[in-house]
Image 1 (cartoon, one colour):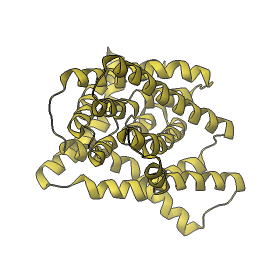
Image 2 (cartoon, rainbow, N blue to C red):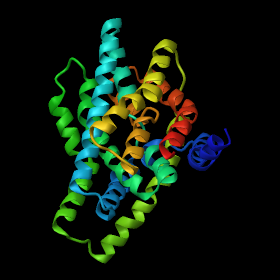
Image 3 (tube, one colour):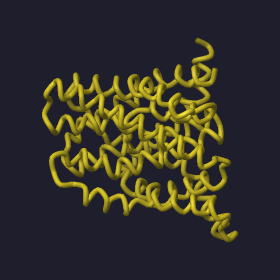
Image 4 (tube, rainbow, N blue to C red):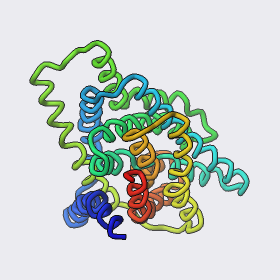
Length: 303
């Protein structure tokens, strides 16, 4: 028990305290998450991914295995949810909402900082690959799910092309392959922005949660929370073995899989009218419960 409390205090509590500061700031100042979210999405996160991918010692094989693991674990989770909701014959919009709430974890705001605190810089590099892959999935498959039954492939692809994270990853990979380096002024600019990304994203998570509201759907919420926090890491475990993840890669992959619902899914659900109140509720519930599930997972992975 003492070890679990220590893990919680050293790795999870700092994230909750910083998010709490963002929550209180938004509550008493009325600060909207929108401008902060745009700053993070268009400037800070691409810089962080570029820095991590160009300074890490990950090989092409490391990258391939992590991306493969991410795709396989997320898609398998989605297939299981689709199977269960199909058997229960749920309403199409609720099926879409459940898929959005369960498939995509908060691998950015929550996951990057958690991996850094718990397992160090190398795990952070692997976690960034998981995050980048999930962002691409959210902007393609996620939008298609939100527009279930509609012709959404074209808009999804256009949305992907507007995602700066994609270009940051491609640019970083090209620099790695060619041995290019940024000029010193650009290098310092990008790295300074990268260093501020994680605290900004945690504060943003708190601001976004403050703007969320509670509504009904208790059974669907319980199912969503269980699948996101318990089933997802259990599904990820055999895939980590299948793709040969070891050490920091395994720690990062399973940790990223065990996180609460991605806050960005509230934006997707609102934009496409897919039960946004339920998806927002899923974010809140899974985030509040997550310390009780993530702490023992970190303990097991660090053993």
